[in-house]
Length: 470
Length: 111
Image 1 (cartoon, rainbow over the protein chains, first blue to last red):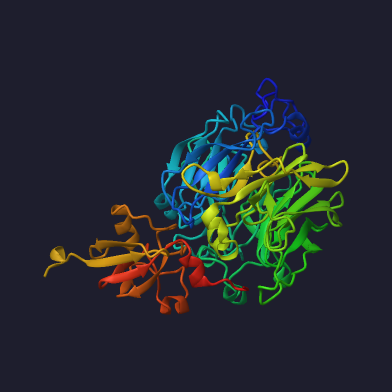
Image 2 (image 1 turned 120 degrees about the vertical axis):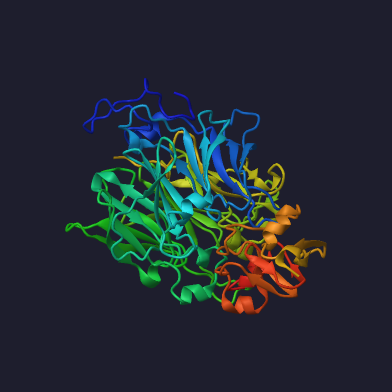
């Protein structure tokens, strides 16, 4: 089987949830993806130049991860965007393992939104090493649906792609969900039917079709978080503190889990990969807590704080510095949780085989305000651990160090001059530990043209944050 | 003078190194649009006044926002910051521009 691609139709293993003829993209189970795929040899990395000292267009970076290659650990290609000012951030596939029933559909196209521009790019990645832009949805087309600020992209069964949209056409609340056609990438309209008590604050989402549930999180209105982080906005209640439970098939808001002080700015939501499970984690950025949420016996959902990161005193700061939990990730076997503390400068590995009782097994410090280590290969770690991606087999963890252009410029302004970096750790799941790989460094300061900020990472063939199982 | 004859206003853009670009901006055109046409690089993002990437500091003269400057709070506007993507000059103006003015305008809350 080719390393970078899902199994071909001939090689597609069969599976038994009532459709032996399943013939679509992806893998029948999370375990199949973990064990039957090979090592990742290519990474796609969102790379942006918004708010950089040297102006330029954003690009999708292609990074060589094949240790046998002469260009291993290098940025080998860039797909430059047609316009300036997009702020590429998160991205997704036209199809994943959730489309396992969709005969003839391939994981071929990347859906790459501009967070600030609201422009959506479709990139054909049929040849993993030679991706190219094939379609652009212009901002005006998106604004027609009174939506802006595209964020999370998931393909969903029944031929659609659903994108969380954080604002209306003025960059204010309410946001919503934009639905695209999976084949021709035209805008299909809005996903949601009934928003109930939801006030339209939005960020990330995950869904579990087997349990008919979607869970969405909250950052803030675009015109609040776009310009930078202002404590006044926290005090004014302009930042989120809740997550939302939606009825997946009815597309209806059902329940709000309000965390208050314990869950300010709940960002990435990661549910168990095992489609039997009805639980997950959300990292509350500002409160710097990991919150476990789960379905209860009566069908409603509940939550507990299961990990708390303590704020730390810093000589240059007037108040204790929160760790700022910005990304979380679950291994495909749901055994380990990784998360980044962007201000403090570390990433943690927890044994979560009992999800309600996570156990810390290891920490890597690299960059940030408190990291002992501030260099790799003599290069300054500009920024701190942020967006994470884990190899499918759970043995290599990669990360980038930029958060968001305007927030970078407040907290790690050196990124604007020299770009951010991509780093890697080797993970030993059998021993419950990880180790920084000092041989690996991709310096986005050396990007062709001018330095860039590196953000979300994906592998061709699917990864720990792209695929959902039915 | 009719609107057609109005040549607009001269805007000077100064960056952090003191380098100055000067351009004539016709009535009603945004500073970012005029700079793009003149081949001058200015930072920008959303292009409708929500994101603040294009925040500039007005040093002399007067500007008007063509769209509500949603990215800037009242106190920041009072301090003379403008959004170049939706601002047009009403007089000859001098502006300080650059990627770092957004962070300067909002401040770093804890440092």
